[in-house]
Length: 163
Image (cartoon, rainbow, N blue to C red; front, side):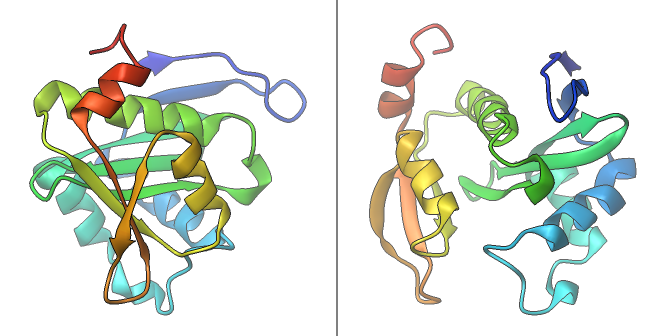
């Protein structure tokens, strides 16, 4: 379990930890609150898919504020991709996404040195976030999403203490 006290909205405390199956309902709430990278149909990502990703394909993390999940990330170790990184808009720009990103990458690159990829809608805050975190543009996917990649070498250069 990762504990980190961070002031958020009137000095609430946050807890960062590994995602559990019991978190999925709250993770889905966060997923549906976001204003960018929205799902055209919420049924496209059922609970069973989230469970599969956090228990078999990779791993997930959540951030709780006062016992409620306000952000989460999931990395797919089998496909070498970021499957999700979302923060409740009410908690945006508080460092939650950055910490979830850090935890996810630290774990991923301890498992493998394979290049990690992700897709996100173009011209969004998410696209700017990944660029600021050291991801490199790598074209686009057929669905129009911008493709980014992060090599182990680039990650290790930015995070020498963790590599």
